[in-house]
Image (cartoon, one colour):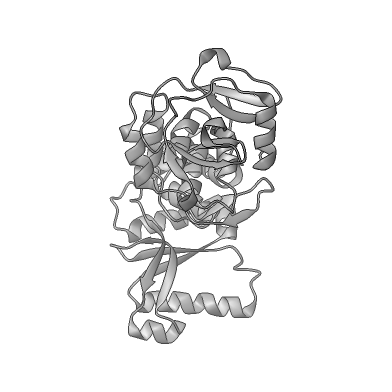
Length: 330
């Protein structure tokens, strides 16, 4: 094997970095945290790009970063993105194999960079995916995984950057992101709950997602175990939403388990409300449900503002739940 100095450096960024982080075989503990190397080789050879993309099972064109404007090339094989500024520490994750040193946008840098390439709602969803316990693969299947980062890590990173394009949008989007979502539906429910009324949301405080909740003794008798992981919960107010996608098609044993969960939650002092896929598909039913959660949380009566923004809320509901996220690369 060649020594480290002989290896060629490839920096994977933007959409290709996002696809890289969708891999399920990534071991963060075996990757090193780095910034752009001082001796970065400016020349990017297409044969190296093709080889790295093949090895990492990434589609072409591969998005790569360059720190030299003259190297701003594009084509069927490679898309070069010029990076001439210094980023904070921990901006890249690196690993080496064969003849290559590979640097990949860290999840924190990737979130900041993608601000320029996604609309606001899709961008929020992207943040949930980075901070959550799932990702959506190229076949639109939901795949479980450990979170790549957290809201606080991204927020600290973004604040540490100097004046860069996308910083304001990134900090704004983070206001509506929560850690530990397990599915796109949990993501949609949480973000829609938090969005301001003027932006088509319900202006609720940030919930906790998939919180491990310890049950009281009587509730343990109901469930047969001491803890439950609650989908969406406002812990201070003891209000919870449980999403159920199969309410009308579930097996009898599943319905029994759901009933036990509800009983155990109520016995432990929580007000637990079930939101089904059918309710989400009917906006008026969904809207009434979400407004009832506002009341359970004891929020200020804003019925006038809610009525004035009904059309906006319906539009955002459609975009959040039924539109597929898109990435536009510049």
